[in-house]
Image (cartoon, rainbow, N blue to C red; front, side, top):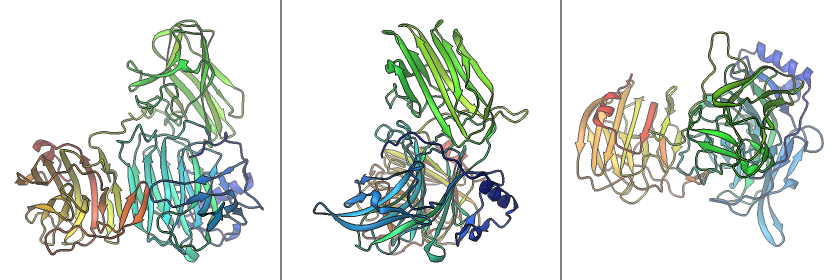
Length: 632
């Protein structure tokens, strides 16, 4: 991923924005015609009326606006990539953004060329939308609209894939990944990877939107909510990528293009919610260079005086230390927030200060008015400092913390918050505790059930989930029908290690241990019924398997010669026909699909019904825990 230049301001047309806001306030059907604006298509209204359109680009004119976008350039290597090269020459503007894909001979080598653009602006909480026509004529092209990284260094926090579509594939993917130094956080499972049958509109168009909120991400396809990722732990401002990679998987040499008609970003107010990424300095943990606090930029003399420390924090486990025992220092840590809604904000922080430094202050600037600062007083204990009335009039704010002193002096800062004041009588929303790996190690469908229609929709979960000497899998299922089906599994094609939870046409619950080729079934007789919630908990610990249904232990089997220590295969929730594989972070058609059989001779159908409260542990639950987990 390229490091991009600092974001540059871009003015939008006030008259046009006002016109669109008035349209949205009158919208009731959820879809609006764009014919009046030169686009023969449909546009989805944002999820709620309090969203304001504050940035858009229709890619008009004769060339790309390089004040707003940078080209995605260079070779894209990795799993599943074949001579994949991104070129600026493949990106053109003419009533939309056009990204050409073609085979090209460059310096005697045949490349599969594509390209893309990366915004120079960063965006945070809000609703993102694009109307595109992904290339589908032949295999090998990966079209996408996503958010990751930053226009400044040290800002790769997570990735939201509004959509990923592989040409000639029948699936669309909506994903959320943790990107905090992937090498350091390699044990962190994918929060959410939804794969569902692709629905293209008239003339191959695809309307994609996603809503990034303090509680997680909601994904929309053609104006319809299709997936939800619950993840309240990550806040970020990052850049948007519009891409068409060529050379993903098997390639057919047919030239063409992916087009994007527009990109739009809407924001709304979250009173009492901190908009500042990593304001509590938890994202570094003990895994990332402590002299480079994630999302913050460090400038000045003796930058090693900037240090993320643990122990004794005011909030959570980590805090920012500015100071040096060996030398004088003069350092500033700062963040620039873009496209926050205009209005009144407050900036607060918890501080400690060893002595009277030459300079110790917190500042907000770049908001469209005068710079404001508050001095950091001497204090041996944590205390709050505040700038209570900050007027933002240009959608921008720069937050800075400066410390200048001699050897042995220091300032410490924690829980820096930039927010619109809480509503009257309400308290600020606490900063979520950052815990990338927890217990359970993975959850899904905690807010509301996921509906599966038996049409091939499924969710991937990571290879580190349901892995080890002991595991537990529990969920609430409501099946549409009695059928042989596998609603959840993490099972490799061969070997002695893996697991699946299955249902049969006789109403049985089956806990399958092993691989698709070789396995043992543990069967609890007739206990699920169509149209009724059924809570299932399956436990495995070193050869002993147990099945609980609605809190009752129904089956125990010992001396099972299989285990759950294989991590070669990703898991699946929903359809389990194995027609698609996860190759790195790319979804590809499997070379040979093979269904997981529930019992000999029975080929299961894709699951149809709902699943909720899915929790997977890399340990075994106690009997009391499993018995206490009943369907509500």
